[in-house]
Amino acid sequence: MKFRNISDLTDNDLKETPFEFLIMKLNDICLISLNKKLKALDLTINQANFLVVINTEECLPQSYISQLLNIRGGSVTKALKRLESKGFVEINPNPENKSKNIVKITEKGREVTEKFIKTINEIENNIFDDFTYDEKEKLKINLRDLSKKYYQLENQ
Image (cartoon, rainbow, N blue to C red; front, side, top):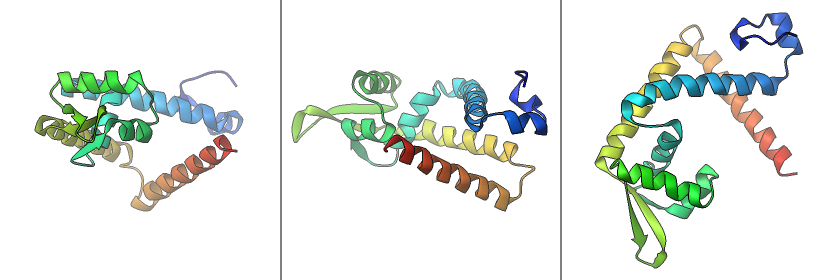
């Protein structure tokens, strides 16, 4: 198989293409497209992921955010500091343990998270306009189930 843009692969090429390659290339295409759209919101995809997690609660311990996103140490601190400098979150010491931080989303952070989610939904609607509702939902289920299998492999 000659390397081509993933969208140019024939059905025959697909038979010879490892599934992992397809997923990685699709991920790359998604991230490039999404990052272009997020520039207008002054966000990166990583920052948007943080905001979506933080937006689920009134406030969260920094360690819990780290755990949910599977990101450790200084990377979480740096990302949160960037979000704080943009006015999207507040970082305060935990009153019960001053060595730990509590992160709270601001109103500005909520607004930009809503815009991000709207952007994601618009992209998804465009991507899936040739799919039936059932086809789209089945694909989501299959991707979730594949994810579970990869986690099982990782933890063996």
